[in-house]
Length: 71
Image (cartoon, rainbow, N blue to C red; front, side, top):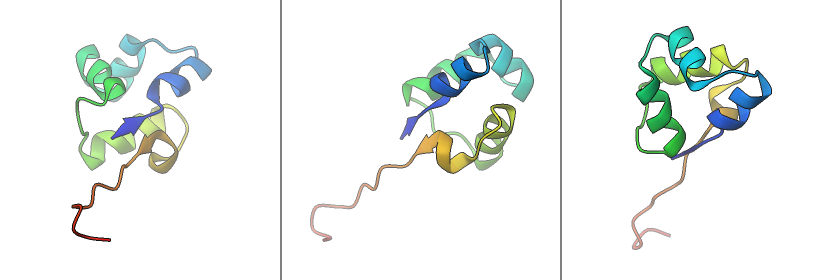
């Protein structure tokens, strides 16, 4: 999964630490989210989107990973 968290943080002049504090997680969680190394719970995705004044759909890009045998 890809995210646009860094882009939206920049628009709001927010650091990773600021965002982490606002949503109640550690800064490292925000780092992992931005790097695509962590898939958030629905609650965390909602909280991050709300903190960045956007929607989950605009913030997170879900890649369709169908098995190769399904067209």
